[in-house]
Image (cartoon, rainbow, N blue to C red; front, side, top):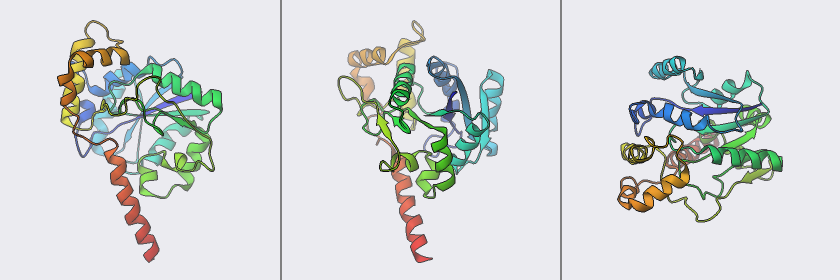
Length: 259
């Protein structure tokens, strides 16, 4: 079985409650789930949120909307992720994050197909980023997730789930899907700041009413005709959360050396 786990929480430091923010009168997280469910490679989809009281509303939303959910550690996301998956014993796991309402089911399927065809331990489209930020997909063996859960120690490895995997190319077989055509890694389609949601809302308002299954190509064509929309959120840095975790790793290692 191939299990997709969508991790999300309400207590974002940069944009609190973003996953519940309305996007065409529906919570943003449900818009993303609507798109992810179109991926043919996924057998089961589960939302993993935290057991912090702030995320009770998110769990209740999943319950009402028929979305499977799991609640675990707020800070140790790797632990949350592992325990969300372990009861299903999948062979492979897809990791998605709940700040990507433009998620592309065809990209998810392509990363999964490459992962299975090449018999990789870990496959993504982010090791060498060529897709817009916000179309990120990671796939890995469940057994590798278990190894990471047992052995990962650095703050970045516990908070971001997969660094333990992709930072060990000498140990694990890694794969990366690169986009055909132009490199679009400079485009920001994720939602980490209020301006990002304004950007995404412009796209949904233009495309969704006539075509709820709008594609990445549809978005690119819209942006080519409305370049002013690109100016809404182009000042932010990609992977700011990982950069913050790198600083926490340094503090962790320095503290260990002093012990």
